[in-house]
Image (cartoon, rainbow, N blue to C red; front, side, top):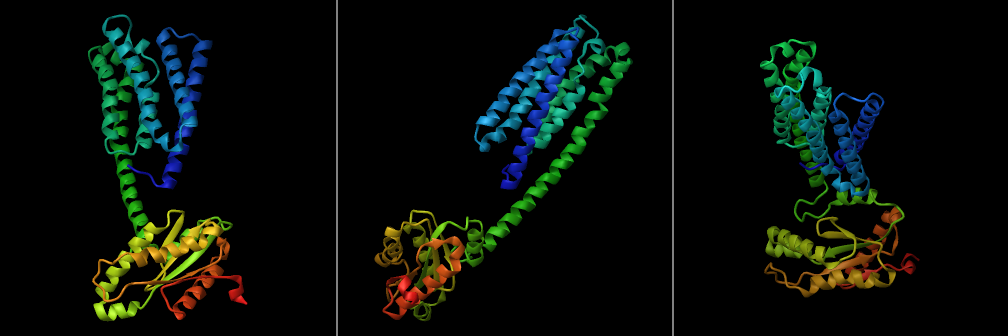
Length: 362
């Protein structure tokens, strides 16, 4: 399931914290067994193995792109399984073979198993992860419980009762509480997606799917204010005549086709918006001064040279006004320049591009 940017940042932060916590726990366990050597070397070996793999995963998290951090949660689950599952079966099989009593030899890992299962359920937002954790839990619980059932003397010991409670009633926490939490998460995710879609729709023109005024202004607010931009305001010539002669449906189809063509003209960074009824606003980001006129006029020429799908009685043309290049913080001034230049183009014959000059303000 996908993440929103905010959710992904939270996920990355949680992953780093869990990695640090797991490494610290492994180091403490290893240090304890170095100071107080365990009866069974498997304790120390499993701790060293887990620490080595966790350090490798941490190096990957540090060096890999942030987009790959999502793969760490399944890797953590693999570490937990390959650490606890072999250790679990090793002591259960040894107990069945009479090498030791399970309640005396079984390592103190039940709390770690519960915690790591909850961690994986928290990190992995997938509908199938519950079953994966459940199966891995059963692979560890069934061998222990089946052994204790057939060895009542060990079952009735304090450690036996602890193991029974841990792998029995306590496991209900995982199978009852956590799925409920996951259900809440997926409902929240669905609601978040709907809100994001509504926000995107509110920033778009419903007819052309270009940005509307609100969407363009929101985009401008997210841009560094010292970014250089140029503003182009394009107006369809005699659009009202088109509506009167061919109908508003034909006018709408023409607007849609025009918007589609505008998207393909300029290859540099830019934004398009439907600014008014038949007005389109184009913002060029970091344009080159020497190519400003060429790039701006390319919009008019590209539209002028191509026939329209709609059967029109006259050719659709554009009058364009182009501002000077300035900082994004002066957008309103640039918009006024583009508007004045566009009106000049319409008053002086239409189907042309008028470029703002500082002398025009004099």
